[in-house]
Amino acid sequence: MSLVEEYAEGEYERAPKRLKTSEAEEGEDLEEGEDSDSASVGLPGDEEDEPGPGGDNRARWAAAKYVGGRKEDVDDAHRIAPSPVVHVRGLCESVVEADLVEALEKFGNICYVMMMPFKRQALVEFEDLDSAYRCVLCGTKEAVYIAGQQAFFNYSTSKRITRPTNADDPNSGNKVLLLSIQNPLYPITTDVLYTVCNPIGNVLRIVIFKRNGIQAMVEFETISNAQKAKAALNGADIYAGCCTLKIEYARPSRLNVIRNDNDSWDYTKPFLVRRERGKGRQRQAILGEHPSSYIDNGYGSHCPLLPLPSNNRFKRSSHEIPEVVSYPLPQTSSYMGHASSSVAMVSGLHPTKMNCIRIFNLFCLYGNIEKVKFMKSVPGTALVEMGDEYAVDRAITHLNSIKVFSKRLNVCVSKQHAVIPSQVFELEDGSSSYKDFAMTRNNRFTSAGQASKNIIQPPSCVLHFYNVPPCVTEDELLQLCKEHDVPGFIKFKVFDAKPSSKTISGLLEFDSKTNAVEVLTVLNHYQIRIPNGSNPYTLKLCFSTSSHL
Image (tube, rainbow, N blue to C red; front, side):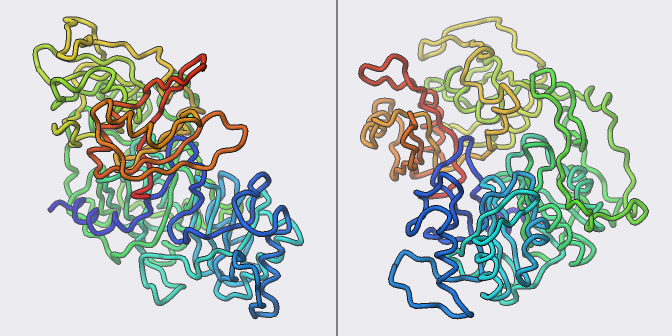
């Protein structure tokens, strides 16, 4: 068993899995650690989310249940019982854990904070019920600002936030942190994480694993350093609008690193050999402005966004940061001159069930698709030209070795740097072996704004569907699967839509990940026509962060 597998098996399954899919999943307002019936003070326009009194009186009504440290008799069964855990909503996008602690510690000692960065929410566990009561009550009487923006508070139905270590001691910590990188649009390497974490506390070891998404464990020199890093970085973006950090304490108290490379590094043992990877696959990410390949594609500048607290109380001064390992970061010119390609080679394709459109349907979740061409000389193999080498890297990370129509895909970097439409022939299903997708509206990374909505997610057994007309029913979607000879779903959920919404969205759960992959490959971008409708609706699918319904 490799080092990465050893940590991935033991730790990944316990890590946060609910991030968010490429479009807002209305109705999914909970994160792990909070029960399904939890409610919170609504933001303007959220009145339908919570039973009981509406408007600004809801938090006052919830807080009034707890007076003088005791719970009053309540007749309404829907009221939320007081809890040491407070649900915070309405946070700004750049808020980190330290901002919440700084704003709320005046109400009492805080034991634990769980960030929900994509939902702009958080759970804050106080040491006692009185502190939580003061927080909720204060929020009803006056505006409470967190990182310059007014926040809203209510009790959570959870009495305690779930955490992976030392369950009996709410104030315990660990010098090893588990980092879940959400929406990883750019490569995450040991160099990147060292540059992010070491200014806050001395980093000893880093291990990155990418089995089902991208996570890492970072070992600090002391528990105090780990606590400071968690507070300063939990909820922060490594790069603007992406690579968001969600941080918990890990279970291991020490990491075992056997080699120094992009996925693992022991900074106390610089003599460990750095493993050489294949040409085109070894890159060191630079914290700062990204290469012009993204700028040329209309993405604009991608500078790092690390919103440390304004007083920088967690950041060490430059003379305090020891150079445990000294190695040069690549210059921009040499970085842009690396040999990686924006063309992926995909083999193991089913000879009769896969074509250019179905390859697009699957690969478009990880980057723009420019061209797809099947190779006549190598049956079952195609070249996929994507928007840039980062998209190829994401596709390899998430799609290599998955099964599609009983065939296991092999996805790797191609030696070619562009797809040339030569030797075009007819595939077994009658379609062309070559197709240009550069101008299609179904590409999902055509602008910085659109790209930021795509939460990069590995294949799962739950699909998120959206852009579906409201008149379409569960039975009609099942019939659609049957007509296209793909597996039907076993569970169906529709999110509550606004009255003015012209489309609906929801989740579909399948028996297996393979079934979900096949349905997405076939039905993604299917044109749904409705009676008397002028234009068809384009059914859009992506993998959900939910593991089940």
